[in-house]
Length: 207
Image (cartoon, rainbow, N blue to C red; front, side, top):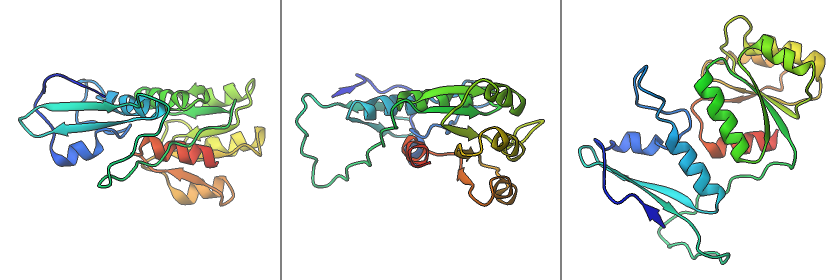
């Protein structure tokens, strides 16, 4: 087990603490950073077979504790706690193309997928994604919907012409379901932002 020695900062409200490990959640204002590091801390702990916990209160600072196994033997979980769902292991060698115009969001999605064991390609626009598909053949494509110039549904139609059998997952909080389903023939998989690491892992592994 590891934890910080002292509490630091203004602390978190219960509502913020519940979402602190979510990859796309931040309380920081524009220009003050992304505040997305805790999702990576949590992901590293889970991949190592452990977990992470937060103890915090407004005005009382915050302590983040990492719980890691000391041996290969499975620890007996306390009866009062529910074991968190396991992150699904990816198929060996799968490559995912991530397309999102927001650099911080795109970088975070790529980091999570790499942490899960995937090979990752990335593009900041629909045009850049199509250029990537001229030379690469990913096993799955993860598209944002709301992008300038070419939205995710338009990109999906063109990507389908190149790779008709490659699964496409949309990750967006603004996706127009009708347009997306029309682009993919009623087989759209939409991952609503914000989502946590387990949801991303399970959606990609099942697609």
